[in-house]
Length: 119
Length: 414
Image (tube, rainbow over all chains, first blue to last red; front, side, top):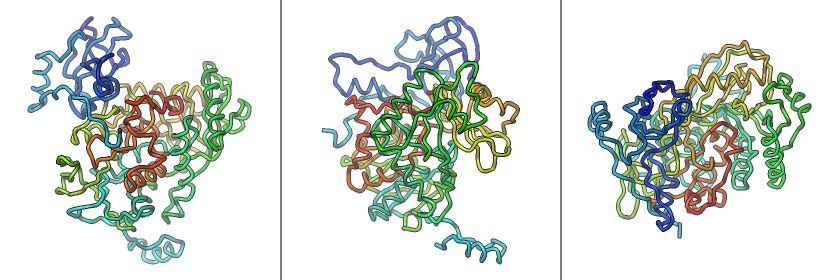
């Protein structure tokens, strides 16, 4: 079971007090975007075995959304940070690098090309 | 390869069972194959088997990083059913269920397929209507299912509490031809059959990189050396995202842990499979007498193959409510498998953005039941470039808005 600390209200609690909300820092594409960009935002997801950035909500607490840096292979939590940023802050990256030497954040995902045979 | 029979059993008894042959060969990897299948679970092995059997493609390798069936094939609750809602799902799951009926004879290896019936309980008005809709759809698809009333549910499952305090049973979707099979034996049977036809099954061989040039895939790098191929099929369930990253594309898939547990063995109490989806638990009894129990999935990305305590509690609570008679059973073992979930809870079978690389993934919480049909369709797609059963499951369906929504029929908590 994960033990998380909400960066807004400071409460530390078990994962059942929180609710996961999927991949963090997705760049939203709306009307006017290309089909590739929209499909990338809407459906395609980073699904790494290792360091992952994701959204959580403190549902049975202050109710606020926040971001979490976590390892999907060991469940180690590197840190939580507020939801109002578009990229993980330097201090979180430093914490991850300290625990995972050689790790670097992946470059922003490019929308995939169309699968072959898809006219 | 020597055939298994009562005579073989008698002959080997005379030599104190010291001289049984290996069930399948364990060759060194060759330098090049016509097709490489990554993943030696049920789906990968079935793909290789049907490539050799149905399409005569025998220069095939199955690369497995651990041991055969050590992933989700050996971690599921062995349920086989085909009572899905949408037509493309009905085709592939019913093909699989039908093939399961004769696999033991085909392999000369007992997969212990037991068509004991699956009862999916309707415990809310909404659920009842959804199952009625599924039963109608199944009738149109030619799949034998029926909606039964609470009295009939109690007749099929005498230990069922139909007057539950929270969620009384309002009816059930009954598929009499559904059932269970021994999951490891399905992987072993396919391995044995494929190996007999010349497929190389290579265990302890982890793919560490995928080589490609401008025209597409050229080979894979593994812990046992580089292997060339022009046609690669990724069939790795929970680790699909990792392989996709190696190949340089993203998938509409996220990996989460789904867990199961078994009780101590007891005398027979239930002779079919019961799924109680409103309260999140499903149950059957193995031939050893253990109750095999499946629960809900975690909501966050996870590769640890462990379950979580709160899901055990939630599942056991649901089952005690539904089957009060089991309330004093002790649980023996609990484990998790990493399942690859798609947005519409239907699998992905089709080409990828990299020419020459094909993928079969996204089976989520319900892949075991589909193994024969999935292998059949994937092999046909690899051999012919397309397949009518696999066709609707291409990943372009998301972009095109042709989702095959099975989030209701998928039967477990998401």
